[in-house]
Length: 288
Ligand SMILES: CCOC(=O)Cn1cc(-c2ncnc(N)c2C#N)cn1
Image (tube, rainbow, N blue to C red; front, side, top):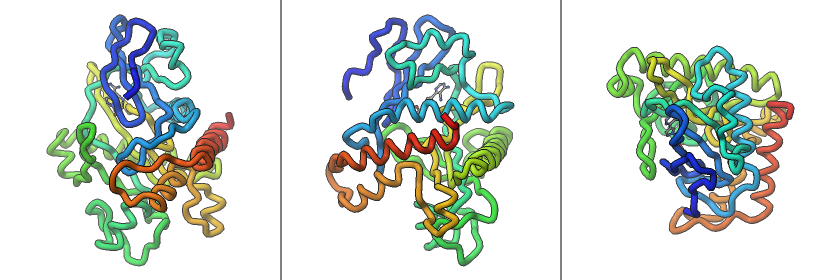
């Protein structure tokens, strides 16, 4: 990994994700700086080259969604503290309260696609949740389903788990809260997106708890990295999955890599088309 320390003093690098870096403040109260890079990952690999502007675009999308989800406590630090964000990353960073994170990926699916479609064909269920017969790839589910995963340490695969397993991991009260909050947020976000001509097919939330015991929506929220977004008009006309997310990259990888060894570099047109889809999604949803 290229040198990732910030040139601005007062920050210590603490964690590298596939596409984001975390830093701890050495001067503020417990705060975490979450910096989004332009890196793109698919099939558990970080791909080359980076997608120009991706980090900034997805940060803007996260911040817009946090604002839309008023009333839902989140991990953003008070905006008056944001002047302390290093200018070198300010356009693609979020300053957040340090939380104790729950090890649960709170996945909500409103449509049948991706790994869910593969599993459905074999078992007429997704993550153990039984579904009606006769569904097709891309179909809207009768109602959104909560299909949690255990958040594995970096480098390991997240593992789909049952709701009962989440109870064992975090207790009944918190497990129920994570499920209910995830389904409620998904419902509100779907309504907001559909009013703008965009289908939110599925997404993944993460939550943590602060020192006062408040459960807060954390991580990035409803970005093209944590969600599948489709164009509603294209979907209605039968193009079931004209996507606004990484599908361009996934489809190219499936057609040009056998999954062994290091993945090939993305061609320039795939990089540009992906950047353009990110820009189009943010413009469509936020108007900016
Ligand atoms: C670099 C990628 O980060 C992650 O994978 C997710 N992650 C989040 C935390 C976290 N830790 C304390 N406080 C928080 N508010 C958060 C948040 N969000 C740790 N890992």
